[in-house]
Amino acid sequence: MKAILPNAEQGAPLRAALYMRVSTGRQAESDLSIPDQRRQATAFCAARGWPVAAEFVDAGLSGTTDNRPELQRLLEMATGGGSPFDVVVVHSLSRFMRDAFLQEMHVRRLAKAGVRLVSMTQEVGDDPVGVMVRQVFALFDEYQSNEIRKHVSRSMNENARQGFWNGAAPPFGYTTVAAGERGARIKKKLAVDTVEAETVRLIFRLVMEGDGTSGPMGIKAAACWLNERGYRTRGGARWGIGPLHALVTNTVYKGEAVFNRRDSKTRKEKPASEHIVVACDAIIEPARFDALQASLKARNPKASPPRVVTGPILLTGIATCASCGGGMTLRTGKSGRYRYYACATCAQKGKSACKGRSVPMDRLDDAVMARISDELLTPERVADLLHGLMDRQTRKDADYAARLSALRAKLSGAEARLGRLYQAIENGIADPADPTLKDRVAAIKTERDIAQAAFDRAVAEMRPEARITEDRIAAFVDVMRQNVLTGDTSFRRAYLRAVIDNVEVDDTEIRIHGRRTVLERLVMGGGAAPAGVPSFVREWRTRQDSNL
Image (cartoon, rainbow, N blue to C red; front, side, top):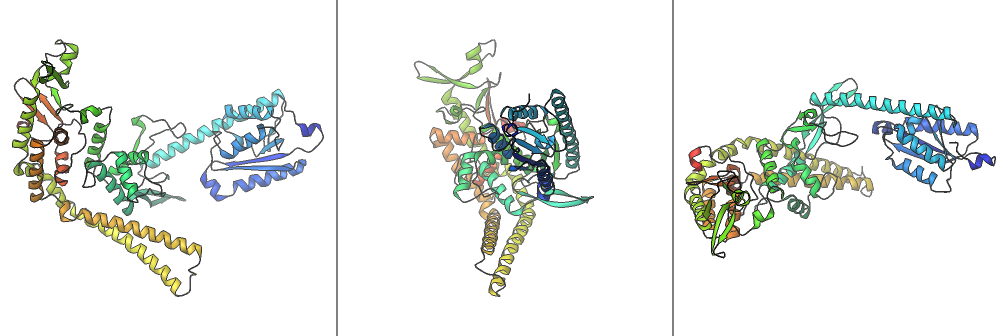
């Protein structure tokens, strides 16, 4: 189809629009390709007597997609009626598009509006042969782009396998440091940012333990807590549910940065076999990180329905049938005068699925509570369970010392830079009215304040009341016994779910399963606040007889 050019029919010179593009940010920053494209295009139009009516520049954007702001603006102006130009001049067809289908679609769209695409280095006509040649050029450009993408991807994958960072912005809590040179390229690795890392530790502590006045927080509650106290992301934005959830589920914080997780073009998840794990310094202990993932999974409403957590029945969602593993649910008799825990599988599918069992509700509730109170909630028993944690506290002293030293250095550096600026102002070297100087002073003050807050949090973690002691264990046991024996149902259920994963009901015995990690967390909180929904992992006590 031949484009109809009104100005050409009337003998008037064609009005030209210049479109220029480079693919990478590095090309855009060097500022060489764009000026060269502009110089050649201007000379090309001048030689033909075409006045330049507009310029459009997309810097650092791929030609494999039409999702480019300036290209879209060009297309809207050209096809919106009353176009201010008659031809679009590009250095080569690949500058306009590197996708054969998209290029042909937009060329025809322009032609329908009376605008023609002209390549300075690949001039083709509008006859069938010219259209075929243009389409061949487009196919070759697309093939070349795919080949380049393949080679770049292979190089980046190998770079990751060697333990280097591939240049994207590092995750919050990390920075990049030079780790060597390969030719003209400087290889980088992830390193812990001492200030941001303290905020990361705080976030994990909020979600796993709370702030000392509540139990473990959900993602939304933690985001609100951070925003209310002035914590911000690296870019200065408030924390949202999405970014915070992405942070607490990112394996980089346990020392495993994952590269090649998604397809760079489609953003679809790649198979786990193609993922490349890059080792880096951990901010959160791997065991602690994995425990949080299990907790988040268990808190998911798809895993634990809200009625299991807030319902009126003490052992809902906890008691299970030993024969089939199904839940024990409420059954009543005599118009509700008698209440039982009965196997749901048997009740719903019959005895062919499970022989079933039924236990009076009060009897099972009392048996579980008495066993927990008499056998678990004693200072000796709790101290024995937490012996390993108390040993780990001692081993962490060296880690805390290193953290404090790094934070102190960061704080001292910011204060020293502020001091030099103030000295320059006092000596008349710098003008205090200079807006650039004011911005610099404000930025360093902010950096100093953030470092001071991080230092104070790290010091607080080492305070005596933040450590598990015999007195803290005794206080925890007293509060716990009182609440599990005499508290109201909702409070007893919250405590019960904090220390119990599962109660297996058999014909002659019940087996109680729980986890040591939740007990550690409760002792640190003094037993004053219920924890979140536990996951069903039976790793509380090491000896089988203690589960009986």
